Amino acid sequence: MNRFKPIVLIVALLLTSTAARPAERTSRAIPDGIKDYVNDQTFVVVHVDTTAADPPAIKSFLLNAAKSSSLDKGEADELSTLLRSNLQKMDRWVADFKAAGGREMYALVTTRSPEKGEAPLLIVPLQKEDGKPADAEAIAGLLRTGDPKSSAKQTDSGPRAAAVRITDKALLFSESQTLDAYTGLKPSPRPDLAKVLAAIEPGTVQVALVPTDEVRRVAISALPQLPDAIGGGSGALITEGVRWAVLSLSLPPHPSLHRLIQTKDAESAKALAELYAKVVKLAQGNADFAPGAALLVSLTPKVSGDQLLLDLDANQFSAAVAQFMPAYQKAHRQADRILSMSNIRQIVVGMTIYANENQGKLPDSIDAIIKAGFLGDKTNPAYTTLFVNPRLPGRTPGYIYIKVADTMPAVKDPSRTVVLYEAFDDWKDGIDVGFADGHVEFMADKAEFDKLLKR
Image (tube, rainbow, N blue to C red; front, side, top):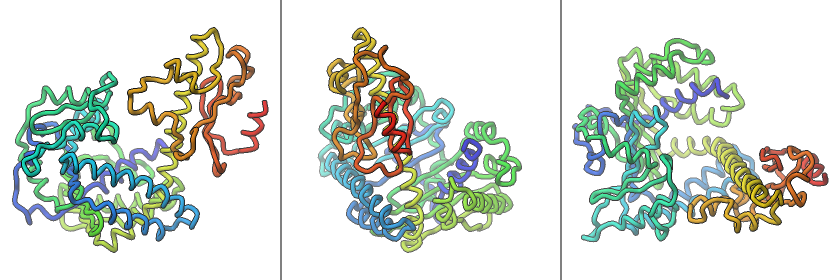
C-alpha cells in the first residue's frame, strides 16, 4: 500500500474543494470567530455550523443510503446498526453542544501542523444567546470526553495531550504543543484567505485550502514526481498548479455538495482533470480502491476555464453517498480492528508489568491488573474504552483473559500462548488475539484458534 500513498494524497486534494466562482461574491474580512488566530502560516480553514444540522433528517438519509448501496442484505443490516449507534451519539452530542450555547466550530491548520506533526486548532466562539453566555466548561467536557458534565480539566500531560484553553471570546481545543505554538503567533489580516472564504457557498460544512509558499515548499519536497501508476511526470502539476480550493457541504434534509479548484491557468485545469481520470481508472482496477471507485466517478469535476468545478444536487448527492457506503463499512471495520488490537496490547502489557512487580506471578483476572493500577489513569477518558471491544461494543466483558500458568516463567512458548482475545458471538471473519510474549495478531482461522486454546 505504501506505493499508493501519493495517489491517496492526490485524490484527497482533488476531492476536498468546492464553491461558486469568486467573481460572483464580494471579498469579506476573516470571520470574527477566528481572526485572532489566523496568521501567515494558516492554509486550511474548516467551518461547521451546528445550527444547520438536523440529526433526524441525517439519520433517515444515511439509513436509506445504506439500503440502496451495493451491499448485500446482511452487510446492509450490519451497517444500519452501526449507523444507528453512531447517529444516536451524534444526536446527543449536537443537542448537548447547542444546550451549552455552542453554535459553530472552526478548525485551523498551519504550516507547522504537517511539518511538526501538530494537530489542527479547534475554535468554538463563545457567543451569547439571549444575553446568556455560553457554558464553556460544558463545551470543553464535550470536546474532551463527549460528556458535558465531565471535567474540562486536563488530566494527562505531554506535548500531545489533549488540552483546552478558554478566553473571553472563544474556547480553544487541541494538543498542548499546538496551543503553545499559537501563544507566540501574531494574527494576520490575510486578504488572500478572506477572498477565498468569500467564494464558498453557504453550507453545514465549509472548507478552504489556500496553500502558502511554505506549504508549497513542503509539498514539492514530498511529491517531486507523480507515481508511475498514474503516468508519472512532475509533481508540480499538483504543488504549483493548484492555487486554492473550496468545499461546501449541506447536510439533509436538503443535501448538496459544491467544489471548486482554482488552478494556475486553463492548461493546468485540463491537466489536473486528466490526472483525476487516471486515478479513477487505477482505482477501478485495484482491489484496495475498488469499493470507492464508483464514488470517484460520481465526483469527477468539470473543467471551466482555469477552474475545476463540481456541483451535486440532492439526488446526485444521495447516489454518491450510497456508493460510498461499502468503502465506509470497510474503513470502519479496519479502524475497529486496529483499536481493538491496541486495547489488547495495552492489557497484555499491564499483565506483564503485574507479573514483573509480583515475582513473576500472573494475575488471576483483568480486575487484578486494574486494582494494581497497571492499566493507566482511571481519570483519563480513554481508560473507560480500554475494556470495550469496538467490534462488539454491547458485549460484556469485551475481552476474555486466560491465566495460562501460575507464573510467567512457567509459560511455554509465549509467542503461541493465548492470554487475551476478543469476546465474540459469531466468529465471522476472525478476531484479534493477544499472546503471552506481548504481540497481538488477527486470526481468521477458528480451527487454529481453538487448537491454540487447548495447548
